[in-house]
Image 1: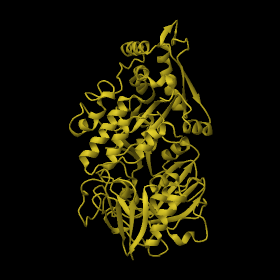
Image 2 (image 1 turned 90 degrees about the vertical axis):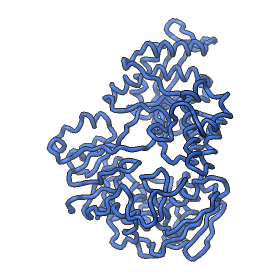
Image 3 (image 1 turned 45 degrees about the vertical axis):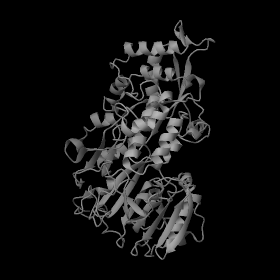
Image 4 (image 1 turned 120 degrees about the horizontal axis):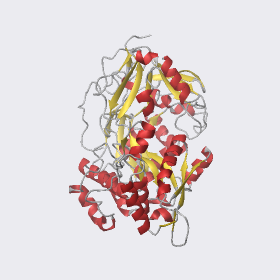
Length: 565
């Protein structure tokens, strides 16, 4: 994205892969739910994520040890001008589909156009920025762009490449259980919807010796077993039917590994540190509602949420508090705005909340008692100043309307968090109603921003790009279906996203993201929950991974089996 790649031409393997890893055997992963399609590029149907991961390749491949660096995969070279107004890829002559057919420029152009126009809507948004695609040689093609966005050549390098001829007699938009013909190291072996799917190694895979692949393709078979729910999956982890398991339940990690396979050493536990941004996860204020248009009210309610108490009660204090959108990374703001970040913020300084440039806003700390009087007193003063006075045990505005809001939730955990919070709000004279609805209604209400508050998680990366407009762009305040659930429409946010997308060097890019992080945090649009600073993995003792983890943390593709089946 910026600067030069960390690895030199001719590198033999990625830093977090073991090029000498043993080959062979089977690995079994567990999934909940099921699938009814084998095309993961459509909105219609549910497809196993393993299809995308194991059977389909792209022009270029990511290194998960760098924020956003791509290395050649199907493409042997890439060329782009300084302004990145176009990108030209040249295909490797040895690149082959699993049926032995050579990958052609026609396959690539068809794939780009078809996935963008008939595939999942996420691909269509970026396609709007493409001016055209043309063949420039026997193995080369050029994509030109309609807008300044330095990320676009990389995005195009990560589009799936499929075989054009497979679709000569059928419509790509029709979901089915026919396996896609791809160029990847595995092919679909056997499957039964709702029960399992397995992938077997392609013995004729063309790209085994590439530096981006050595040490990654270590199993002869990769199998996914599907379970009705998480309890059934966990039971299979304990019996050893699942080879490697990523643990996301902090309480179970702390207290649940006292079963025989774990205590006797047949199942091992470990943690992989990561440098991924925390993203944002918490209670979201809908500022389209007049009540939450007042930042003082948002600040007051943030003061009333005792995260330390909730963390101990629900999660055994396993989580760290999310302090900003890009916390846990070098893209998160820290201390006073300085240097390039201060320059970017200067034109908007007069409209930013007090203290934004000096210290920024962080979620308040409590004494962990569940009734921190200092924070509740500060919250009460803010509510008084905003015109919401205590009348008996209820707060009312000048018109006599009670302070009563509803939070829309989707899970039992979210409902419990809201119920804990409602106890503190009651002390302030505020009523919080918890509303859990069926999935169809939940999706529809969030799409139309029909809620006072909800819970949301934004997964953010070390390489933020055009998706920030979907998350926080001003268009989303009125346009349904974006992820701008808080309704932010701030010229400063728009300017930082624009600068981020157009930056030609890492310094400007990082400064713009830090400024964006600072602005969003200062708006108090979300009351943050917590995050885990490590990935937590449990595995059968015959499986292993390299000692060194990638910047992005746990990567399942680098594991191997010490004793093959």
